[in-house]
Length: 116
Image 1 (cartoon, rainbow, N blue to C red):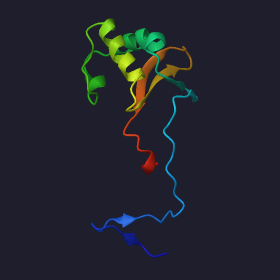
Image 2: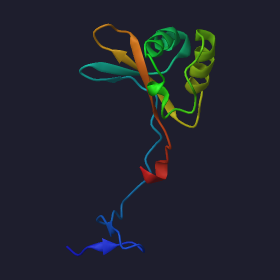
Image 3: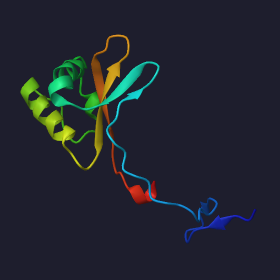
Image 4: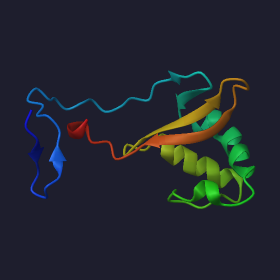
């Protein structure tokens, strides 16, 4: 098989002539061995998430986020509600399978269906 390169000399993978854009990810429950991902619901998960984030002794959990640690629960709940309703990304609560409590969040961002 011959190798193909882009305009900058970087190697490209095999051509995919039948490629079709992928649908946007949907907020659905995803089960794993240790945790479960649930679509973020601020009313359901917010208080547990605020408590989980408050356990950190410093701001390192917020390093790559567009916000700083929240001073109070009401501020966090407003932020979580905005995340829940965002159309820019799909936001999940991470649920510990042993305790059934929300312990963190994650987001699928920069969703570009045409790129898969």
